[in-house]
Length: 337
Ligand code: DP6
Image 1 (cartoon, rainbow, N blue to C red):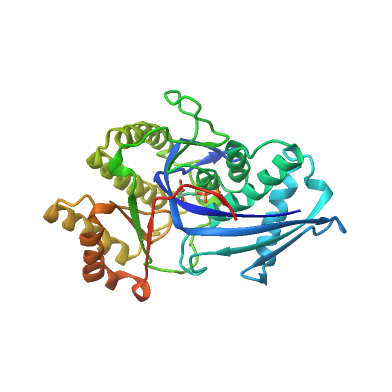
Image 2 (image 1 turned 135 degrees about the horizontal axis):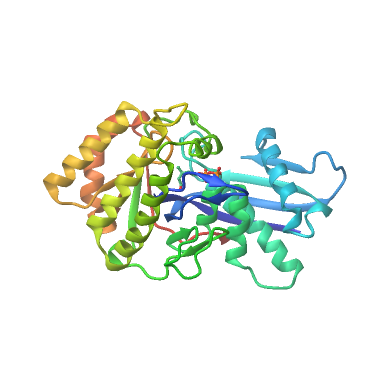
């Protein structure tokens, strides 16, 4: 059996930072699904020949043993969720639409694409239709943020008492969003393509003994509900305020953890200052966010695209590594190929 899926990356608007047990988030998060930054994965089930190594992983056609080991561990741990997994060997061929060295986290799109392949096979073997929640659930077990790359424009992951059907186990799509957010753009400014200084699991662990952890989880829960409200009523100001506060809080948490990490570069701060100045001068709702690295995502409604992209070219490219910007936009999730 062979199956292929394409799954996008996503950008967190309210961040997941801190986890427990088996990939359970310490707070609920909200993300926007991307479209152009994606992973395409082809999975072939083969007859099992050896127990010791049952995954062959090719990235861009080249064998990659370190990722093969991570996937092997992941598949091994799924034997309690997928009753057929122990019976096969796997050939997995993956490629990303974005350059490998762009400093963009690829675990979200990679695990979303792989989990979609697994769910497709599970559905076929059990004679049922593809279940997006199960795909999100399987993706989460590979990488938490991957749970949010399966379906829908804005995704919610993590239980919240105010949101019906919300769950720590899988992400759900936001049921309605205001038209101003329907065609959002995300320009990803590549400040540095160097490898991440802190792996995400190490990063999440830093929250365990963190002095500010309870306050942070409370803030994240509030921001989660306020962000959903802003997306529903079309409040761009509230959206932008929460978006930027979340990014800066994430970095502040890393700066104040033990050990401490400074993941922004001077150019990241230059971009942030310029964006705030541009917003003040033009009134255009252009807002920034960052994940656990120096690259800056700029979010804006599509009808401001010309003005924003002109500003990026004239004033921000100089802060980017080799003038690199990836122009992305809101997407819909995983797709069968
Ligand atoms: C800062 O999903 O990469 O991007 O579950 O350990 O794979 P693991 O972590 P990961 O963490 C993402 C952290 C973040 C914020 C976010 O995407 O919500």
